[in-house]
Length: 244
Image (cartoon, rainbow, N blue to C red; front, side, top):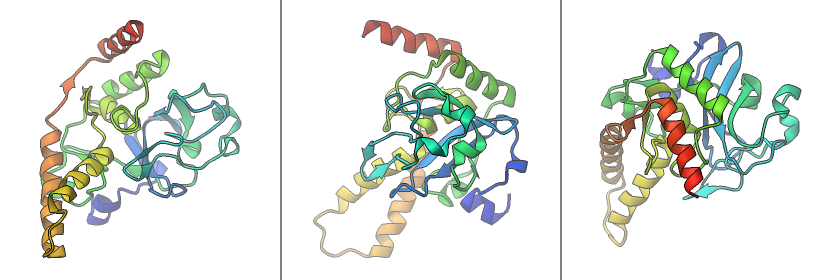
């Protein structure tokens, strides 16, 4: 991919292949939170939405905020086509690409990137993890759709990005999640607290340290989590619901 593609990850629908992890930044959200999903072909996406939203709504993470990031897109039920409007309330969903994007720019999430490539997109959009074969990716996505077995949505630890990353890699961190955008907020907050109260700061030097810190943390965190087969994962979530 060329330099521009590495930075903004924008692609056309014609560039997509079944099993691709796609995302878009919600332009109608004040925080431009990214929504993620797995392209399965024929203009269809499987993705994960807040279980608390209504079937007629079309906002992911409605009224959810995390350090200033909101996943609400501000869209109404009228933004869905007739077919997608009939979806169940929240959970793992199948929608068309148009309803997934809602007018926002289609972007492709890259896997197996280097540290240098991670630095080009600190907000997310790439991972050092290696993606598995499209057949495995599609099997996980379809199985989770059929069973609605990805558990309960949580903006911080179990969101749409965690879903897509799991489908692509089979890797999941049950405690902290694998979302790159959430981890970015955590690390910026943690890093900022280390400099609070200091009077003399070189903004450029602080930025360079922050950038190095973020890349190192993201690279290291890609080694967290465990590989779990999708059938086992669904059983784990089902058992946890029974215990409740």
